[in-house]
Length: 130
Length: 124
Image (cartoon, rainbow over all chains, first blue to last red; front, side):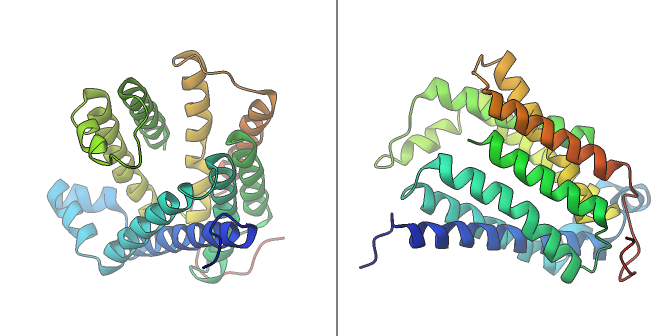
């Protein structure tokens, strides 16, 4: 059986957290884009209407499922590796993969300013969690 | 966006206070986590994180993901400041540098538009 504390295994666990977290964010963002401006929906249909608009969107449920997957891969990895490695690595990498996914999947207009912001936040989170 | 940051930061801090009062949870006794759900600090932490989710989703409904994510990362800074002055944790120089980098990143992204049209060519 593979040693789950070895370098490649830990890298794979971090990869799993980053992938599922990115999928969750992208799917949720795409769901909310499909739902439309929530403030306007709330003004027209009330709070209940706004909540219903969100939970009846299939992609929202998929996003929640990916969030749960990400959370459990985090819990799993924390039982095999140090939190001081997992938390900064997963937290900061997610900002970069999210920017890539937002550009390629959501076709957001990721300009130089946003790349820079993603990189700065990525480095900042890595430093903060050490 | 301010509510997102504050709700998330206070939610995390409340959870931290609640869990510290409870003591470390052993992996062999996961039922201790169920007990944690009954302490007021943890309950208010969970409620605040619910508020955070609602605000985060609302922000995503009118802004790009690449705008919302850096902007909400100010919560990391707020958690660090709260834990320094309230929980009296020590913050190393590397962490202060991290806080500065995140703040700079947020400053950059909030100077641009929150929402950009789909599929347009990147501005240089």
